[in-house]
Length: 89
Image (cartoon, rainbow, N blue to C red):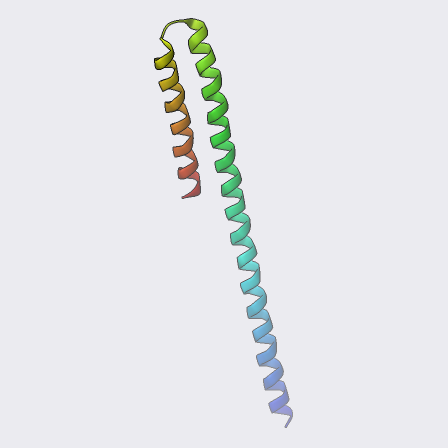
């Protein structure tokens, strides 16, 4: 009778430990994903700000016409989007 009780306690303890490990791994995964999202968002926002600055500088330098400055801005923003994709995957 004592062996039966010890066995069921052992099983219950094993199940609790397994459930705890599973929960902790889920928390770690969620934390990693949140960090990746945050890094990606920061990269994209940085690219947008840089694109705005570059366009203003481009127009002020008067080396290119407005359409060329606009295309440079688009290219900079696209590079930021690609960097975000690279971070997330």
